[in-house]
Image 1 (cartoon, helix red, strand yellow):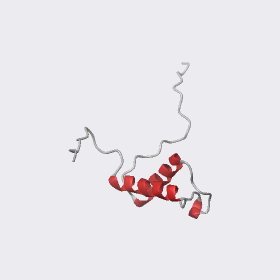
Image 2 (cartoon, helix red, strand yellow; image 1 turned 60 degrees about the vertical axis):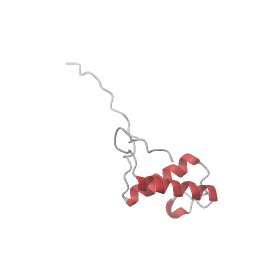
Image 3 (cartoon, rainbow, N blue to C red; image 1 turned 120 degrees about the vertical axis):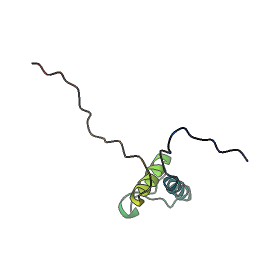
Image 4 (tube, helix red, strand yellow; image 1 turned 135 degrees about the vertical axis):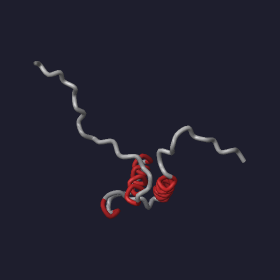
Length: 82
């Protein structure tokens, strides 16, 4: 068995978060993963969407997951004309 490699910094995602994503991926493969409120939406086929659903579930359960990147417009650094 290979020795575990040490990481330089802290883990970005918690182990609980990776378990949630793993479960979401399995459900996608099985064809039971659904999107939308209450799971009423269509079947999820996209790998990226399955990961997003898994991370979203992990966030709701309080697992260690980095914050989402805000989709707001970036402030432009304008010089004041004084």
